[in-house]
Length: 515
Image (cartoon, rainbow, N blue to C red):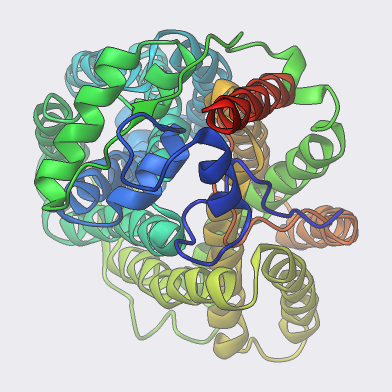
């Protein structure tokens, strides 16, 4: 069903004589009447995009930077860990799988906590946990201590990412929402680029993998510092009936954005928040099931293909092995890393950047639904082409396009998903979706690291099978959210407010007639 703007959320289109104008007439008075009331969505659209929104975009992007760096660093240092502790194939495969499983658990739990206690406070506590456990993993002297510490780091990193995406949605006006989320995804991917660049200089040193983790910790500490200077989402305050603090944040946004605060009263309500059952209740059932499947399948393909493509490039399937032959071993002859492998990781992540930009442009110009459908079917097509080419000549261009389209799909997913759910259940729902996303990544990483050693063709066929499921499911998406203001409250709360407003308007009209 096509989403349309209802009378209570269309106010960002000023002066069009539409539903927003009629609601204001019903509330009594002109647009400058200090007695009239606004929803938080109406306030956010009036305050627009400015310096405050840019600051929030920067800080939330640092959060996404840490998330991607955490995933990328595992692939970069895993060979060094194998040599450090003489790991077998199963122990090696468990490292990325358990880290991503930790992220899935963190996303599932923290989303609920953020809806109940607030976005900012949950992210702060999670970052304290990330910093503490990162120090433990840097100084770990055994495989199992490292595995437990990094899994717990994954729990806290996975907790922050969906909250940051939702927070940025809530603080962005409609015209720049896709733009801000594209920047969010771009800086996230620079986290992976940062890891690869650091690896080229640090991994050849003694304890290189520890130095690599230390570099990421430095960025994490910087992010924790900046998180102290952001405010709680006014949308959260509005659904907890905290009119005073919500108004304070809105006034601060107006001040920083250099715009005048609209005169009027903020409408607030008390909503039941953070309930998992809302994720599968009507009217969210259909979209929740579809997005859960897409999230799992997309990350399974992306993470698995990340490891597989790097191995294909590094081990000579593309006739590039002789060009990047520099190999570094320890005193026992164990291969710590190949210089070419890091360069190929870097190429993969640099290729992702234009894919993310195309995803943001596509979501804004074409729409969320066509972008999701088109990108997933494109992934299926190019993955199938990759298998055909392997039997004859590996086409580098095909790999580049595949990586580009994968990241395009991820960007569109993170623009689209938080727009589906209202504020009272947004972080809970997106947290659940991110859990499916990370679970898919864990499965894809495990298959790539464990099965690839026996027959990499099995892994490629699994990517096609999983992506075929996702592509078919996308055909059932109907709800377009492009240009639609975020919902904050339950439908029954909105109906109650509209009925009360209409009654008040009728009384006002009767009083004027009597006078």
